Amino acid sequence: MRIAFHTKDPDLAEAIRETLSAKGYDCVQLERSRTQSYQDVQICLIDWQAHGNSSPQTMLQQLRRQSPSMPVLALTERNRIEEALAALAAGASDYLVKPIRRNELVLRSEVLLRNAYPERYTQDLAVYGPYCFELRSGRITRDGATLDLTQKEFELALLLFRHLDRPLSRAFIRDAVWSGELEMPSRTMDTHVSRVRSKLGLHPENGFRLAPVYSYGYRLEQLAHPSPQ
Image (tube, rainbow, N blue to C red):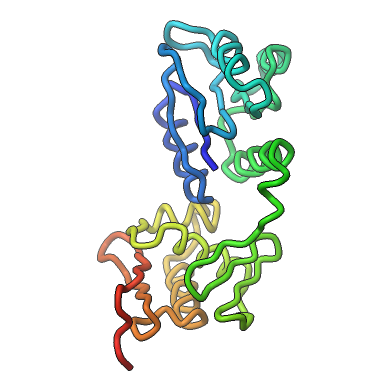
């Protein structure tokens, strides 16, 4: 699903992009000062602090003309309830106070998406070759056989497959799976990666390679031709 967001705050933009991309969403940042097209967008996040040449109310009116039923999540300032009420009165579906908490951003976005597009959530499977991820139950099967993974191992494996062939930084993985736990020991991630590699059989002879990227993080690669055993 595609998520559009509007903000002039670069830190907020980066937090939104990193958080939602890590969950598999396609994120696009749009400019307030231009006429926008919301084609192929399923939800929109609007920073309610006015910037540029148009107010957030004007932007929301424009969005509603193009897509009357699209969910809109307004990002409002803490301790300014009048801002949140104004957003709801203007047609926002829900609001989230800043600074955003990443888990709450994901939860509120997914609740709005489920309510707006229930038919898209009847299929809760993600399939990558012989691996089938059951998103609601947190179960993984390989060639039909159930694999024994913890919840964190499931989340890590899904993150790696959703970003197949892309190097992922340790910080990105930590934020996505451990919600930015600053005190998390480095060996915790390494241990989980090792267990995911072993339990899923992510080795060249099976067509995949899960390897460290020096001084950066990890990358899961799908090999064109499995290596002979």
